[in-house]
Image (cartoon, rainbow, N blue to C red):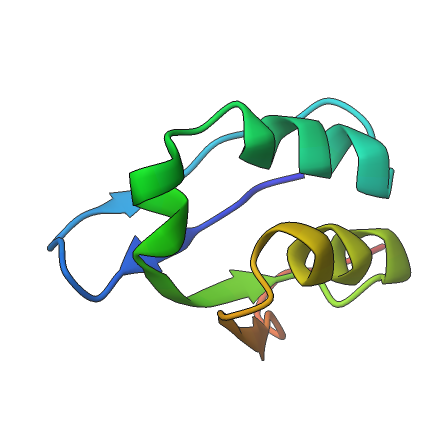
Length: 74
């Protein structure tokens, strides 16, 4: 899973690959990040699969979810 995340307060983006395609693996990755960084996220681009949406809902309820339609999901 690839997470392109951006904060409105920082001119940076983070890309990372998380092993697994479950909500728990994605949520664990988010929870391993600094709380201040997570709180600064205002929008996030993601694969709109159920597990990913669930992880974002749990950890980033304040962030706008933007569907990633550019990637091929074969």
